[in-house]
Image (cartoon, rainbow, N blue to C red; front, side, top):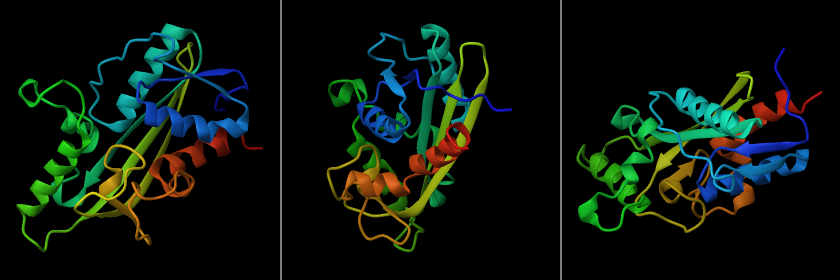
Length: 209
């Protein structure tokens, strides 16, 4: 039988403000008090996994062990069909600035440009099919865990459009849509995103009847 979350505190194992805001909004209706790993001063573990599931569990288990509370981690990324599923688990790495590019940190326009450059190198007929993947992992301090996976399929566009969302949102148009995730109202995106898909499965199991 799957362990269920109570209505107490849950550590969100991320230092990404955008992810924390999205996850907090999705959990708010269920009376869960969300605490960020950053606010608790928890370190970010090395994401040494080769799959979204492995990396999500690494983060959730580290936060649960350090805090003594159940922890929820998200590992997500963009898989581009014409790039053999890249950047995949290295989605965030593609945004890392090198020392000669200025201040360290992540530049998502750099990442989006890298994807676009690789697509354009394959010619104008290249497939622009892509999918966002999300894995949500819950870990408890006693090593119990649960995993939920979600996807959002769509097409990549160029140039980027919209200033909402984060990451690759401005170049991703979901199936049956005409706006990018970066152009959509947050509520509309939350209803169809890869994270929403994973959360629907989490909610059904954790808070369902």
